[in-house]
Image 1: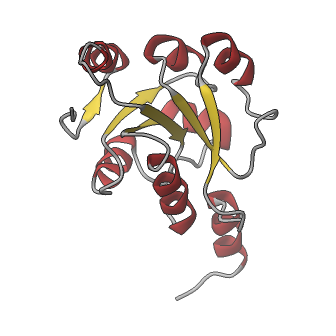
Image 2: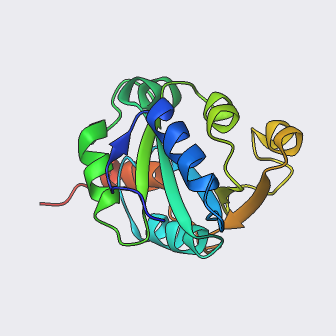
Length: 164
């Protein structure tokens, strides 16, 4: 009950989820999301923990336009297709999709995963899509380690402390 490891449109992924859910023992699907603009160890720990919450981990990536809207004109540092390729290179990631909106609401409504994984910079109550998760019966899991590994902080530090 695996998916081809690739970048899917939301509608393609919804169809794959329907196929998987029709099996006698459907997989527990976990959906994680983020910009993943500068992949670092915090992302790896988040994704490993998220994967441990189910049978299949799908990552929803903000599109380049969505990253710019959220992070500013200088972002993303890495384009969507390269971010997707990097994530698909991680053994814990089963598939990747993307979304244009600033939040994951439409993606959650269309895909209806069993678990919505968020990083430790959130609490279950502060997840922007918490109301939709509750409405759809999606479990929220706070994943990763509590050590701060924010891409924005790494970028700001590099700007302050340029290296040869």
